[in-house]
Length: 346
Image (tube, rainbow, N blue to C red):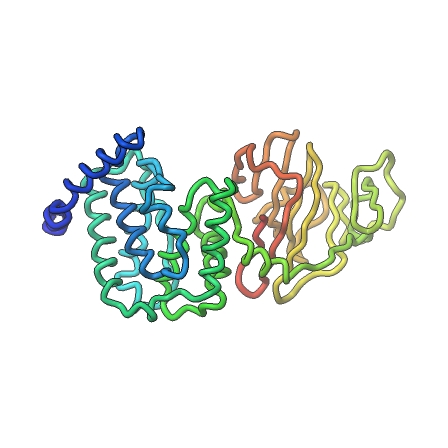
């Protein structure tokens, strides 16, 4: 409670003036004035701009060109304060910060929000004491920030939330390899946050993913006899069942096939165009069961997406994870980093 009280007293000296200034500016520009939570994010963006002076992306937040709704501001504050607390002293401890999804915005208590703001303010105070060069994230991050700014300007990203997240995450990782920060950040975000959290992947990260591109051809000795395979890359259900040897690796239930070449190490990326109604797509262990009609899920050695009846998209976890209809794709990219983590479907 003393910490919460401290938070309320110290910033209150300037908070009233800022609110009045926001109201006056809002009247002049004929828009709604900012509330306390929005102003807190504006100040946070201003402090973080010091770290990335060679990129002007966060200026759009504290200049009010990119204003977030209050619910998004509150969720951001709670989430990143939780991460800071999990790290305790983020610039001096090892390991990557883990996400605690925490409470939904409408369930956030005011005392929890005040405490969260105090945690972030304490972190910012420590950050200000650091020499600028020691916290400069490096040119790869600057390039990603530039790309995110361009995406926001052209309407490909709804706001600059991703830019704020990238800067904060960078500062919370101890002794990072600055050349690979954007890639590490993307993998962390895919691993820890909810499905659909990444609405835009920066071009420098796409370039890195594309460097791992491979050609995938279908193994006809594994294909269900009902499938028609053409050019070793395309398949669909045929009109009659073929008379083929019943190899142990052949699917005889589900209409599936696997690639001719498997992977045992390294990074690999490939893309698949999919149909509009029914399909399954992903990766499988070499030992995964292929006979019969058992579910092709994580319990049986598969990491897959499935579209049913053209409207139901799901990840075949156990239990399955329903995905929003808005995510139904016409092309799926599969990124596999064998040495680091399971596949990511983009």
